[in-house]
Length: 195
Length: 195
Image 1 (cartoon, rainbow over the protein chains, first blue to last red):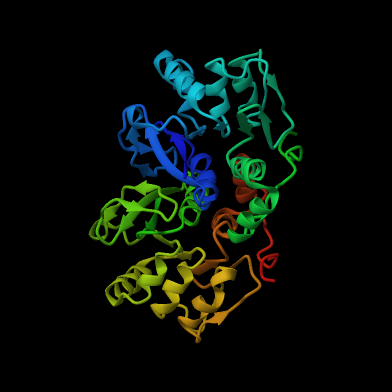
Image 2 (image 1 turned 135 degrees about the horizontal axis):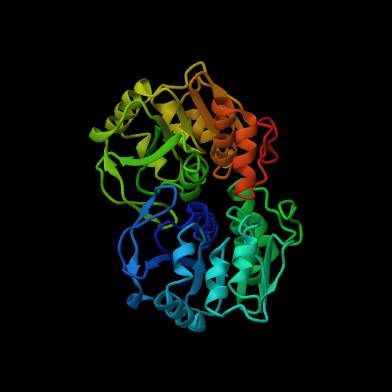
């Protein structure tokens, strides 16, 4: 099983992490693991307290998943965190950012010259982290090379299904969506929230 | 703030709890709290480990939320758990069951004579826990008195928004859905998974 390594931090957005966790964690090909810089209990912005492991234990062959949330506002100014993120992303075969998680990737310089998207209500802030990224305002999610990025919060679930479609086939993604009675927004260009 | 008391148990389904947690936890009127019978760390079926408090600390004025998941299969045979659930539900102003969480309410006798729904793939099993409940196969979610029940997994998010619409108004629910870029299935009778 390939690990899916969630990089959590204080005040991450609950569904950014646990929407994709539901979907990816229901695939027998993947195994979910939860990490944070300090390896402590991490509290989401909505008050879920999750146990995490410290990063030195991480299996770098795993897919890296970075949620967004109001905790990103401090982290874009945390050079130690950004350096850690750069090293983790360099080693990972795929990097999935949900919502303002893409602001962290951008500030770490990982999205320069790459197509990416982010939360629509924080879009300008996210985009300002690296004007050299090819920001797409109208997109449910984007994939460019090994980097995936989604629009706000619930779009992470559509991206997770899109990632599974790319890796394991579209029928598998459709079956997973049906099993959780989820109406998958399968068209990554359909974005009713881009206004 | 009114507490939303999540009753967690080993092998609960991740999104059953954390989909509604995202939505209800984003309302300033509510405060999320997570409980389990033993008050220990609880692992979801997908591998998220959450800190919970023991039940003796619960604020009974809070809304009770019961997720489903494969952990319910053992709990319908656990008379001590069912008795606890009866007491918690009796005290709560509202009881929200997601997915096969309604099987637990049914087995505890709480849904007799009430309209309720459940996960479509486990529907017959859930319904068999109390044939005296008025089971509705075609429904995204149901409300009867203080008891709400939803279809499978992701339907819990639609129900949470429906609960907010009932309590705080439809516009508030629509604004919350838009903020997390979620396409709310607002019609509780629309159920494409009821086959």
